[in-house]
Image 1: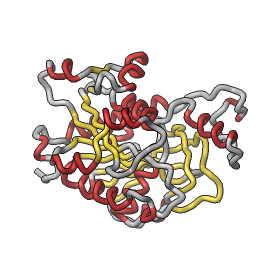
Image 2: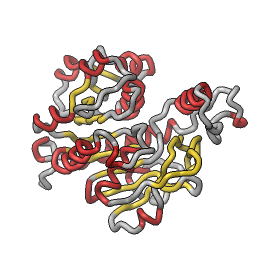
Image 3: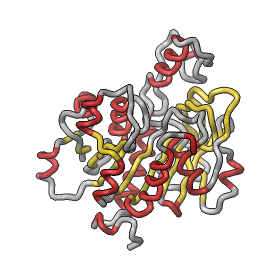
Image 4: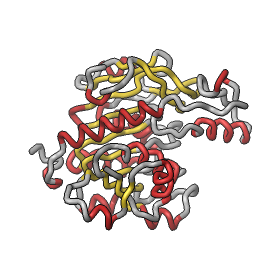
Length: 309
């Protein structure tokens, strides 16, 4: 089944060209099923790129998905046209005031990891988002900084600054292979990493109820399950396009910033070669498994989400 997004959203044409099934409002209305309502709280500056990345993954399942784009209420972006934001995004304050509920919510990363959480300009509202998920969202997926922010808010797990950026494609192992979120995974897999901070495994292990599903000896825990808050936290980037790390590397080189060639990304670690995507299949597995778990457990009546019934 397809993902339901507006036909004039840029992701509609991008995904159609890639063979991902998409449908507009009129087509969806003719199907006598309840779509899964998935929200994307997009904190990344390149909004359209991020929309495409996540829509591609959640739109590849056999279920009808209705994607809603959400932004922080008072935070503006200089990297995305204002008419795009006005046409496709709703501020969180409006979403919260509406009382509507979601089967799933993705909270993206953000380029603010150098700041303490409480110095991020929208931190107070983001804490409201986290609290709101407990009564209005069935399952929340925090990604990179978004995941670090969630695990810090709910469990006081700190993010730790790194001396050098963790940057490249790193091999990870499944530490809980029986987890339904890892269904179909190989014993180990590669995933893109791009961050200046990390979460310590010892801090995760000290919190009852937190379960590490995947980790790397080089870049630490990757995927953590938090049943008490109906949440997953992933600190790396399965959603990245084949050239996303290249874009980041080329940007920093052009700006004269110190940056290492992303590890294990280019063939022979040579930036003159085109990078190869070695994580796409596991990306689809993870997000497909997440959507399937939501489908299996979410109430048919949206009003029952967050009520414990």
